[in-house]
Image 1 (cartoon, rainbow, N blue to C red):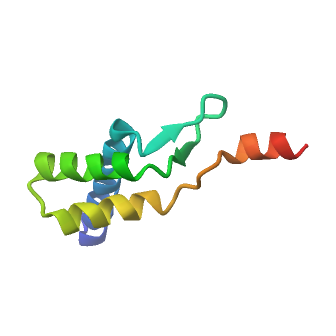
Image 2 (cartoon, rainbow, N blue to C red):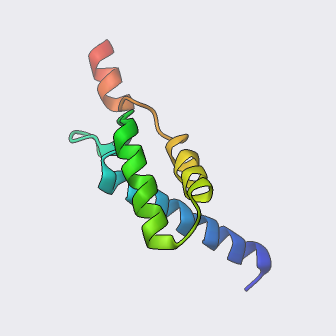
Length: 88
């Protein structure tokens, strides 16, 4: 396996781990109608995810926080499908 492929797989695994932590803590939620993940803008849930991430991984707070923030950056606070239906 090439080095770049291994790096990609590691990055995808870290991202999946961060997203799952955020879902479990309630910082991310899945739209009931469309299945899209949305940022719940819940700082307490985010902090819960940080604590869980430190406990599960053994990584430091700054590293866990960065992984979680990177994952959250890809999600908006509203489902695009629901937004479109509201606009119509």
